Image (cartoon, rainbow, N blue to C red; front, side, top):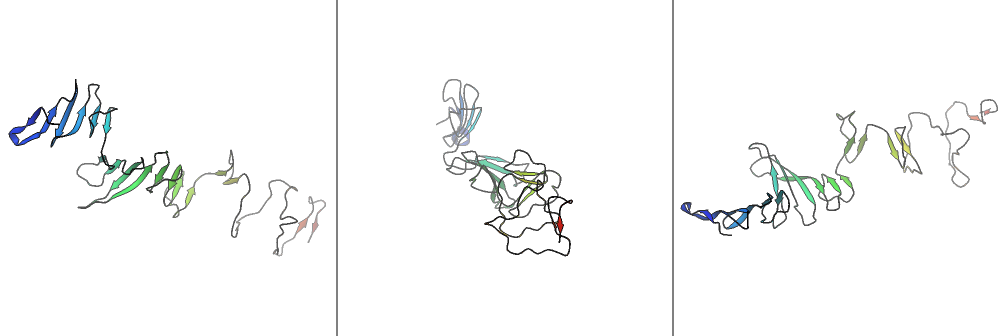
Length: 219
């Protein structure tokens, strides 16, 4: 819209401010509305009808807000950069032609992606993660996870480094630096009638067979 108050003396008659409606104020550059303050005090950038105290709108999807310190080029950008309705956060690099690297995405459905442009799960993390504050000086392995405390899978409580409530399968070797003990005495089997172990290799120590030390046989 053509401004009511323009800077004609400077040859910029399309730049200025005007009253778009009662008790509202708009600013225009090159004949285009760029900022509007409504009668209720809402501020709109790129829109003449802001619904909230601050509304930023861009006709084409892009990075609407840029935050940086002083004259440094390594700031942060955020915006709805894609047509998927997601909110994207970017870290701008340094130099004459800085690159905007996406660091975090929140999808329209609420999924969060860290280091990813698309989050297909409630939390998707590219590369690695570390949970806890005890060993933050240690870097988690690539595409891996470090957990400082206990882990419970299918459990409502966890009193061990790993508690699995339910079946578990290991497709590979299991190496122990300690004893392999059942949770209860004389209760669980090692193998079954239909799932037998093939070979059993034992060292030179004694094998104990029985329900207790009072009635056991030794080999």
